[in-house]
Length: 227
Image (cartoon, rainbow, N blue to C red; front, side, top):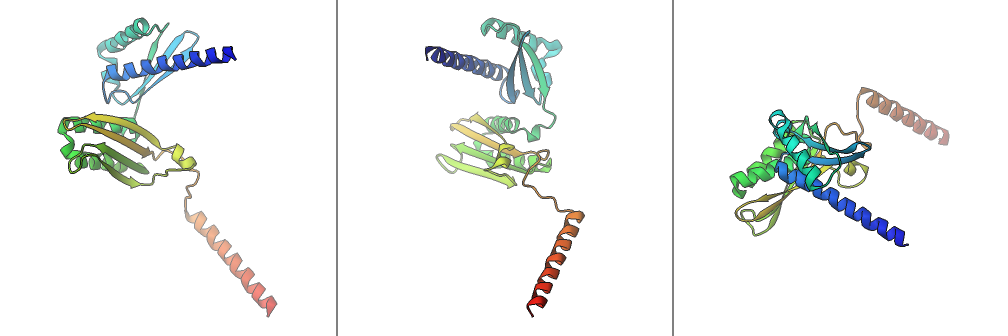
């Protein structure tokens, strides 16, 4: 029993330390630079994978920023042999965290007065790129209300079931002069395979016609037999 408790404490401590490393990396790089930070543990050390749409800004000239970050992680967080890898996001318009951070940066730069323009532009850009669905929610001190929730949505975005699991979701915060604005973004990428999606093509139409004709003939035969 005591061994289990010690193991649980060590696991919690380990997870806290891992979370601290991830948060430090994101904070150091700056808002909108890193979408996700993943840590993998290998026999030769820790592999830190940073997903970003702006690899040049993270790497720096001649890799100086990566080298500095590696040094801090090794010394400040006592990682044995941290190795940083960059995972470039090729289509940032389908990455919810990237979009949420961009909206936050726009609100901080232009102010909450333009929140509708910022949200609708993001919505149009994502749907224009081919997304199946998108939802943007803004909460906080926005013009016209003390603390109101605004929702901007378009397309297909399932909330429950297996289809809801493939929806990319993320959150961000914008620190504006009137106050903090919470941002939630949900995106359904066009590359996601939906199990409940039915594609109606020529073959499907022909099969439906054949089945309809067979059912009709059966009904006619039944009616004739009754008579």
